[in-house]
Image 1 (cartoon, rainbow, N blue to C red):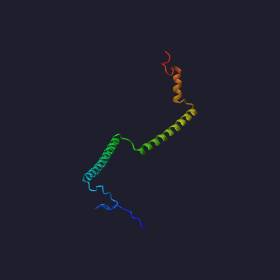
Image 2 (cartoon, one colour):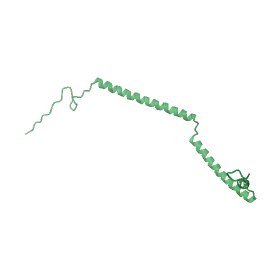
Image 3 (tube, rainbow, N blue to C red):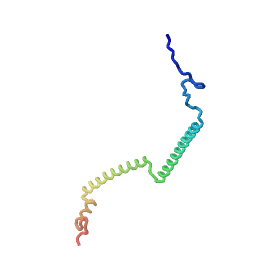
Image 4 (tube, helix red, strand yellow):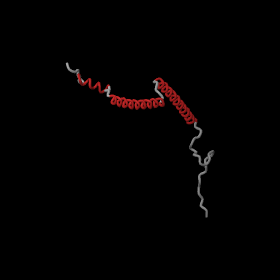
Length: 126
């Protein structure tokens, strides 16, 4: 024997699986949805415009400060390091030549003159 089961019939004008209580044509909600969609689009456009304005202002400010490009700074830094190394080599060479020739360097001559008459921090003998 076959068992019968009762199933409710779909409401008139609705397809099966659709909630009959849900309103699909609500003008107030549609208007609000359009308003918020437009407001979100306007807010995104405002944000993009503000970012562009702020970026342009910062670029102008940095240009007015006359910063050097990073490459130029690195090149000058390398040149200064090279010159410093060459100066140290030349200073060592001059010291070596002074020793060979028996000439007192200005550094040691100044120190010996200072020790004769004056002390380092005072006025000397009166």
